[in-house]
Length: 423
Image (cartoon, rainbow, N blue to C red):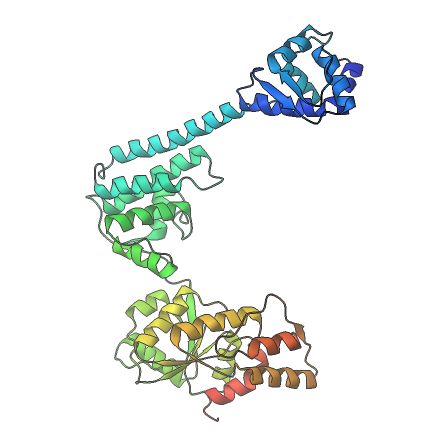
């Protein structure tokens, strides 16, 4: 309930005093909520001059007015309302925020976070080690991620010290799963999942302790975990393949050849790829597609040529397989969707592996657009920002001109014919 009479409040809230209260509020919030110092109002109009004269108790005649806040505070307290400047401002608007105190509080909380980390390190086996000092300095420099509360930050940093003590301390050693390690440290098997702040903290410590660079990709981060005998989840993500016939007597190589003999697709995990010897005949051509339906169609048609599917944007396990095939001397041919994300993916794959475009030119697109239209196939609009195809400067203009998105499934007959060795 307002402490000001309604008539007084209405007058104080009038347009003639709006700039005064705005400037006074800004000054109080910045100087510790003290009615000290002065403020200057310029280009004062007649209405403002009249109301300011009444509030300040002196006749104002110019277009510039200097207001001493201590005098204004005394005038307000001596008035019928009996309220000081701060109380009047809060009657007319929101409570005053002491921004100086807020900043001091934030600084104190920040210092509490880093003092807690320093204390945790000092009582750990890593105390005084060069990498631990550098780790602490790096973390202070990077700061706490936006939105992480101080108590949460303290808990997470202490968990990081605990995990690093387990992995790098004198009792370390022995292979353990990342989920098991996370559950022990945080109570959740997902506490060290890739992308979490805790995982990044621990990985930075591992990198510094092993004098290696902090990786900027998923494959590098997996390798970092393996440096300390932590096995990430290497079974949930797979790469879809067909017709791979690696040379070798291991059971994995034999299993792939048997699946190829039976025209069956194969899903390979990261764990498979670690133990698989991918030796193939020199210059073997591996066809790469974007959509699993192509693999399905190739298997149904008993195709004879090898095929790897990115299943959309290529995940780490896909790139790991393609990297291994490239290292084995294989060559590649790539086909994907005729839409802008498909062109972006094709650019990456073709550039990374020197792949030849596989029915991915402007003529292929125009022919497919015409044939699907003649067949009465519904035409999907081509949305998004155009992307130039590095292998064919005419493709993006042709796609932009026709404005039709054509997915890989629409050209299955042609792709299967090539994979069957008929063309």
